[in-house]
Amino acid sequence: MSVPEVVREARAVLEVDDVSVSFSGRTILDHVSFEVRPGEFTGLIGSNGVGKTTLLRVILGLQKSSTGAVRILGAPRSRSSRSIGYVPQKVLLDPDVPVRARDLVALGLDAHRIGLPRRSAAQRELVERTLDEVDATSFADARVGSLSGGEQQRVLIAHALISRPQLLLLDEPLANLDPKSVQEIVALLHRVVIDHGVAVLLSAHEMNSLLPVMDRVVYVTGGRAASGTTDEVIRSDVLSALYGHHVDVLQLHGRVLVVAEPGAATDDLPAHPTLQLD
Amino acid sequence: MFSGFMVNAWEISTIVAIVAGMVGFFVVLRGSAFPAHAIPNGAFAGAAGASLVGIDPLVGLGVFSLLAALGISSLGRRGRPDVATALALVMMLALGAAFLSQTREFEPQVLGLLFGDLFGVETRKILPIALLAVVCVLAVATLFRPLLLTSLVPEVAMARGMRPHLIDTAFLVVLACATTMTVPVVGALLIFALMIGPPAAARCFTSRPGVALGASVVLALLAVWSSIACAYLSNWPVGFFVGTFCAGLYAIGRIYEVLAAAMSRRLALR
Figure 1 (cartoon, chains in turn blue, purple):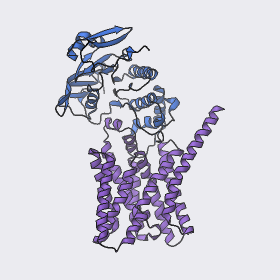
Figure 2 (tube, one colour; figure 1 turned 180 degrees about the horizontal axis):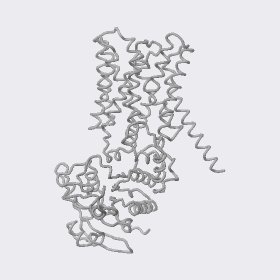
Figure 3 (cartoon, rainbow over the protein chains, first blue to last red; figure 1 turned 120 degrees about the vertical axis):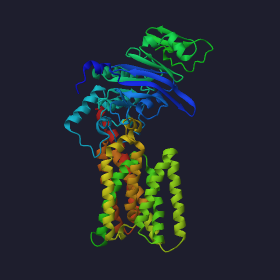
Figure 4 (cartoon, each protein chain N blue to C red; figure 1 turned 180 degrees about the vertical axis):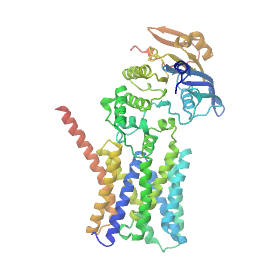
């Protein structure tokens, strides 16, 4: 394929165009539009229950939207898109399930194939290299069910990365992780974006740990979304319009705090671990 | 011990152990022990019904286990899978009770379906059972990787465009097929022991999925072969030995795991 470099760079990896979803009359997503471009780190930010997971399911093709469309690399999304890697929050497995971290990563290569696996030396080498990329070599032979949350995240990221997707979707990967693991996973994903030019779309209910690496933000509340660079979106006027009531955006020591005036409903504001002194 | 009717027993038990070990690996991995119990138990009603209308019980077994598998799969999709499985089981047992009440003629046969009749296998039955076994083994080998991924991380499999529900249904059909061939031989109660004990024990000895699958088959073979030998020598029922050895294998596996962990801790301290 001789696509000119300029054209390829300009094309969005993911276009979410005017997507709405409602369940039994209740609107979950209300005409949401945004783009994810190659090699960019995008944060999908919003508190729990604002429709982040539904949006990810629409992008993955697991949920139909009532209006709008999702395009992957300019084409309407098909069910078996190999250009998207997906990382769920956690693997729910017993520690005695006989599957090692490296087995799960290798399945990223060929789980859709039939027959017993016979992997070539080149494929085993690729598994090894991918494990190394996510710093999982030290626990590659441990059973997946016995790993910690942060270690499982690395293995799941490696599983998704090994098929060289253009877009990596992560559903709340930082929830339930200790602060050190959060930093490690964010640094790892930043490295993936830089080294492989993979676009990352990561949902989170807390944005401060992502501020140093986030190129763009999609801020979701009440089913509606605002998107752009952090400077364009995380502003008092933009977020007030989105929330439908006045909110202030405070910048403190390189961190962001979104606060509502006293008396306003605040349960839709994102979480603020910054209030703890850490 | 290796002549006459015993030849059939050795042959058929080898076939059954290979199938139970392979299918059982995924029964344990997917947490499908309850369907693995319900399908063979419910299928016995099919055999009773078939005898009543005068057709081969194997056909009745096949039809009922297939219906059970599809029922569990389609009901479990909408409601709780365990409730769907229980109701499928209850439904078939109710039919079984109705069929049995019609005649007392085949009561010994029914006992044979529940506990198996390993020493009474006729030579003409070996070929159809061997064919069903080949189907089961090929199906598990073919679906190995999709089954593995959908069992481990169904959301990821779905995002990759795989259909976990379709794969689940395919697996239940394989389970039904394995049930049909093995119930007349080792009985509805014992096939369950062979499908759970050896695979669960195999997991204690290895962390590799492929090796665990092989170990599960080897342990199932060990369990049935030693059971036949013990039953032949002692005149106790073969089912007693199969059940005891399968549970025993699991106990040995657990003890091995504890010892291995203690050993590696001691080595690490050095």
